[in-house]
Length: 130
Image 1 (cartoon, rainbow, N blue to C red):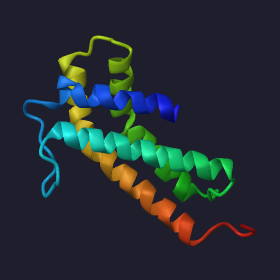
Image 2: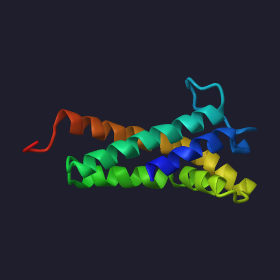
Image 3: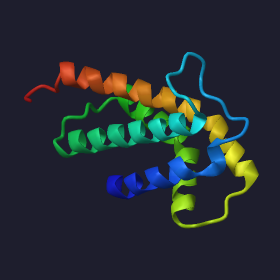
Image 4: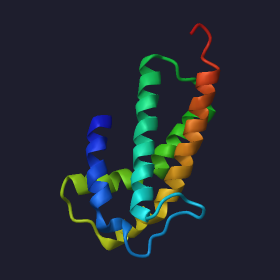
């Protein structure tokens, strides 16, 4: 799944969805919204890869906070991922949907950062017996 998601990066970067009135967050390092959206997508892919590796090694904590944060990330990034999938499949994408994707990217970014902070705590405090 992660490898398939990486194919979307090129399509996402070339997409016209992220031009026009979309803007980057205040105090951002990005020159354009397209660069910001691509960075968020890449960041999410990296975090998902890390989650899968930790899961396979049975190193993920089994607690509500962790599971809720992971689900919140999936929910917040759903539109960005759906857009990438539609674009990859060559589907026509409405302007309304593009606007919804644009409006969701910053929330997706914030949720990824929260998930990454929890993953950092896993690195510092591995489960007992590890």
